[in-house]
Length: 230
Length: 93
Image (cartoon, rainbow over all chains, first blue to last red; front, side):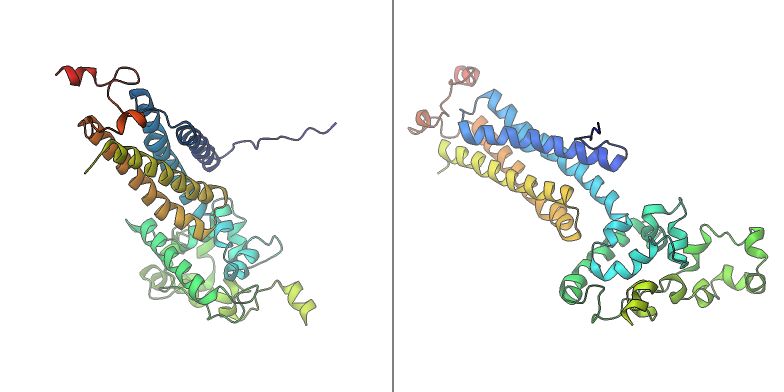
């Protein structure tokens, strides 16, 4: 006999926070519905109950919900919830793809957060500027891309706000590992790469990173789908 | 003129606003789409803060004894001394 689990198991911090937020919101809603239904006198007990229902519990929901929300925004699944990002996210999670985005996404250090790991700003307020840029994305999505094709066909080419910095790559590829330095081109450009005069993306170009992207000559779909479409 | 009825209404508005705020925040948690998350973290929390402020205002007004001799008070369950004997000390003072 197969027994299915009715309640999903909590395995991550995000799931724990979400469960806490939902539990707090249920308690709050029960208190508020009780008050609205019975309209008791504003006795000390009622005031304390309402303080929980109107203050303590909603504050708990906001706090845990915010953290869970921010955690979720780091995930590739969140990035792919806007359809114009599907050429990027579908390729990144394609186990057969040889693109740089996909190869990096298969690395456990990147995993589900591969978009954020490579594209977030890492200065003091990096997380904040990244979130502000995310709000800009949402604005442009609603105003310019909402009615584009299933993979964003017909929309303006998507581009980054500023050139991709070498530091995004050199955080992991330290330019000192033997496997990296043994590449002839790396040896010849070592100082230029470290100074930022030569960009990693000069050689590892966009079509090698996100080959399905319209901006890099793709049509949004996987190679197999492209072939069958022809 | 602030009366006991005003206090009662403040609490009622606060309760309804909190329910709206909770609905927005729960939507953001259960369906974490970009637009819903932004709504939960902006409007949801704005409504939540507003409702808490309204409730605290109602409590402050109530503690100050606003509308204590309001003739409507006995009919809306707000008269002093009713319910766990609150306000007795204040009356004595």
